[in-house]
Amino acid sequence: MSETTAENPWPVRTVARKIGDWVHRLGAVWVEGQVTQISARPGTSTAFLTLRDPSADVSMTVTCPTGLLRTVEPPLREGASVVVFAKPAFFLGRGTISLRATEIRAVGIGELLARIERLRKLLAAEGLFSAQRKRKLPFLPKGIGLITGRASAAEHDVLVNAQARWPHVAFKVVNTAVQGPTAVPQIIKALSTLDKDPDVEVIVIARGGGSVEDLLPFSDEALCRAVSAAGTPVVSAIGHEPDTPLLDHVADLRASTPTDAAKRIVPDVREETQRVRQMRDRGRRALHGWVDTQARLLNQLRSRPVLADPLGPIDRRADDVEMHRERGRRAVLTTLSREQAALASARARLTALGPAATMARGYAVVQFYDEAGNPHVLRSVSEIKDGAKLRIRVADGAAKAAVQGDPESE
Image 1 (cartoon, rainbow, N blue to C red):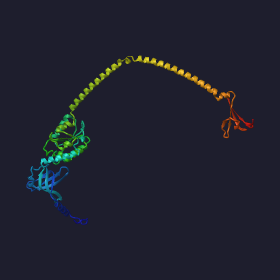
Image 2 (image 1 turned 90 degrees about the vertical axis):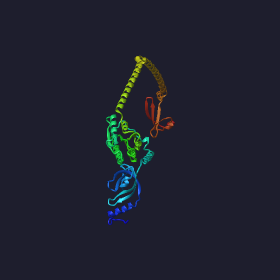
Image 3 (image 1 turned 180 degrees about the horizontal axis):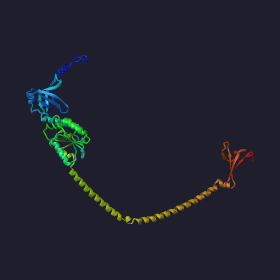
Image 4 (image 1 turned 45 degrees about the vertical axis):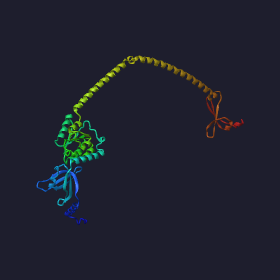
């Protein structure tokens, strides 16, 4: 292809023709999907189908001869799963791509069940069915979200039975399609809305019984993964007891029927009232028994001698305390007298041996001063010279003197 520029652009017809040439070179392919819309007007040779991917929000238009549509067994209806052999076609005038089908095969029940079984094994291997990830429902949720069909028997069963068990239960009902091609996206959207609501503590997805095809949306992989990722506990109440779509394994609680779901999400006010009454009676009996036991124990304690005559032991102990106090006082006085005598004797010995007593007998202590002016006791005349300053200490005081002449010559 030649390059285009702002000065030399291609016209729309050229771009459309080139896209059409490229699409028309594509080969035919087998495509699987879910029929969401069928348009086959009488007298026309072409029928139009809308084929949707059930696991993603993607759809394509399929055209086929009207006669081919009539040959499909069982007859096609909206919500049916099919496999078509078609070639991509580009319509130049509208600029749209569609599939031109030359063969249409309805997916049988056996194939549907086989695919569900393969998906079951895949989700189980990823841990979506694990009991460890399932959350416990609150005892009495302040708000319950209900996803079900409009004016359906399932909605009636859940609301009536839940309100009969607990009259003040609060529901937030979101009506969606519960079968057909639009069921899965509507249920996922309702689940997301209720999961974000802080007043909703439990979400119930309910539907009555039906055929395998009717219950296919509740085995959809996208719905199962959305329920697994929800932050609010989810209760699955799909069909009757034998019906077990994959949603039952992913949900936090599986109820066999919508009526059973109503019984599982709220307690019975009559049963709880009876249980409270029984617990109150048991508490009353237990309290009376405890009071009787404590009263008997108190009577036994009061009958003991120590409590019968509480002042007698105190008086006896008071005499013992007084006797020990007097004994202790005498022992302290004896010890004090002995220590006072020892102290007086030690004082007399110290007085006799001290320098004051010696000086009192006429002796004196003579000190001289060195060159720095510090006093020293004079022990020899060789330590002083003529004119040296002396300090003479006697018993009652001290006097200063000076040396005259050479001390060593006298």
